[in-house]
Amino acid sequence: MDLDQITTLGFRGEALASIAAVSQVTILTCPRQQQPANYFALKAVRLHTKRVMGSPPGTLVTIENLFYNVPVRLKFLRQPQTETGHIHDVVAHYAMAYPMCASTSLPKTARSFNQPAMAAFTTY
Image (cartoon, one colour):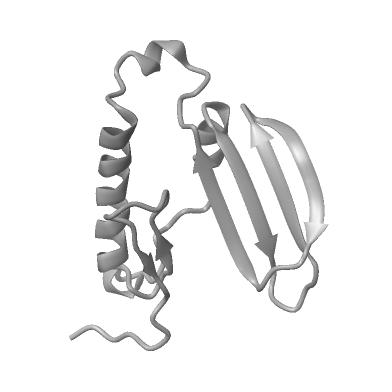
């Protein structure tokens, strides 16, 4: 396959277990042609909540409180505002590089954004 033909960010879930081990993860997923959606909330890899709910097609993965349960890592973290700024910068760069993917920056701050996916996007 030619590298110019790749149209996704390549996330297939391999890292999700590692991320879930050190954070709180929620997954809301609804395949096309299927209703309702499945919602899962995990805390340190353990299933905390599972339920069925309405949602448009697609998958939303939310990672919160990264490294909350890893005290050794916590000593290297800066103030929450600084860490949030670093995360915002990475998400903003991906949003600009991949306008065909919807991107949202949370929590709501002066630097927050909500970029819907561009349906028709061509590169020149």
